[in-house]
Length: 469
Image 1 (cartoon, helix red, strand yellow):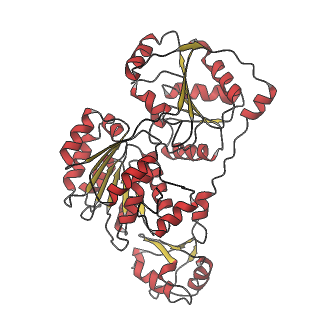
Image 2: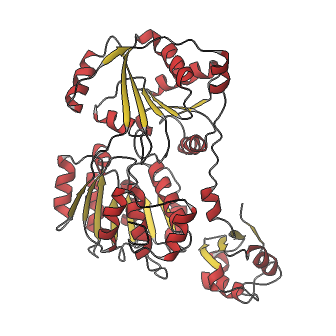
């Protein structure tokens, strides 16, 4: 089956083609038709199966572009996941003029309020901050026709269920609700019974493509064995999981001293630092990411060659979430777990959790060569050109006037459409904020519009206009 056969329109198909989406993945093939039919769904699918596109594509298709109020809410457990889903919506909906915004904590409430006052099609965010906006009447959900709960089991673990219940209390339009979860614990079952009427259950088969290895490693030798693993396999991308921030910092310092291309992420870092680190890792700016379990869920990194559990996970459910960073979509993955002399109880718990034996083996020492050192000290420099192709022919303009000068989107549209050879089809998303505005110009008309607007007025006001940086 092709994406076209699923009933997606030409603008979406164009974006999919540029992004090199060749054919629907199994979860997309099963979910998209039901979501296009606005049905309630429960989807049990492992991390990395392609589920983000399975709900993003039908939502983009069903959006009424001229509607000002949000028509879809996507609830997620973390800021990182919220931003990544927004990025996916932006890419897949780039030719549909879909506007999405991410609403999470530890961001200025005022700026989010300004964004929500503009025409917005999809709001993605964490339950706590979304609920804050609902309580303060800065988020209007009267037109919402889709609600997505992504990584629902993780939101359950983070005690977001009461916030989710409160959010549903604000919804009056009886939207189609879809729950996506890697597991289906009792809490999620109860939630689905509470809010989903006659849901369709879609359970994807595991189809695990991860080779798992368990090595007996003395606690004092973990750093050295880790270094030998990196030198032996020379992975382009590796995530190492440590149990605490202090542990992650210690591993990071050790590997940096060994001149290994690496960085780290944990909750002790600023969120902007964490997000920047993930972006760099995805681009191949460094090989080894050392992380606490803050990185175990919801990170859309399409190709991670291996996961190393430097420390055993706790609770054991984190084992599945951690190794799920590798072997995503159609890629084969690898997972290595270090088991020290104090881990007997953890091993027994993991056996019970996985319902299988754990074959613990000694690690065969490996001597790092000069050539190994040269390779693992360099970045892989993965270049992502596909997303850049979506931005061809687009330019975003900055105007130094907004609501303070009584500028409205219609005023900007009117001024632009007065320019010869420019029409509504050449205008993308417009954002009018308190003191500035932004307008996206399409179809290679950016330079023309910029030049012409610099010599014109908007609503009889002379504004400073330049390309947004």
